[in-house]
Image (cartoon, rainbow over all chains, first blue to last red; front, side):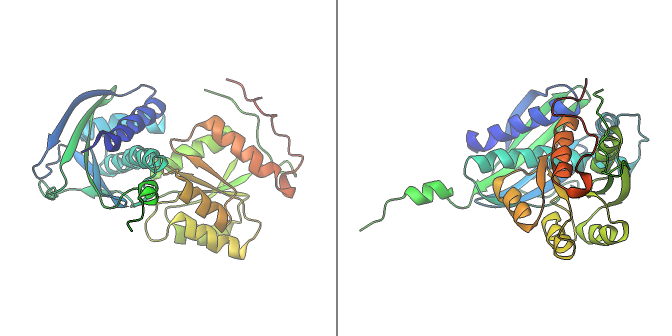
Length: 167
Length: 150
């Protein structure tokens, strides 16, 4: 996967965690994964369709989610499955929403769908032309994983516009 | 925590808000800010369809509307609300802040846009602007720009 697709996710995660957790995120580990996705904790999947197509998964343990929920709510919250799911979806929304905004600024056009909780132990194999980038972000509340699998469907509009006509 | 001068209506009553977001956390976060601004919660909704019903029921002064939601997205809900209530004051609140989204929302009748995560001081200034543009809030005793205190 090309760096121009990855950097916006790193920048967005840093920006969102700095604002919501009052501390920047540190990249702990970064790897490429060609195997089917296996979640580590509670995972929210957001599908992206357009010039770039694919999906992004935000994955964290319930314990980390509860700590973040407390930060988001500004008070201690009760540890329930509902709170964990809500927290993971809201974080996914913010990180991925900000990422695609940055990608859009680079000329990519696409639509983002609401997050869905991914509860299967396995599944979501990457397609032949889509390898996944797994990014581990270290925050004061614990580790958060981003699993990004995207591929170009179309050239960016500005590249399309500059392709010379063939006589 | 920052303190803000209360945003009030012309009749000195608190501004009434409808908060629309499919995330309970996002709604709570916005409601906390509304409280900081001296506002009142008229209602809340988790999708566009419920937002329309809640708008008709509560007639809020301002709507804070998410874009990406299940059942009916925020931009379509804006279009339907503004079709019936041309003077509705709707501020879009979304993590997806690219130009097409913002333009589409404004074309359908939204008054402004703020990107998540929402900073209280940013939302405050936007609400001041949206309310000052409206005759019912003209002359409301709001703080001048930059007057909120840390």
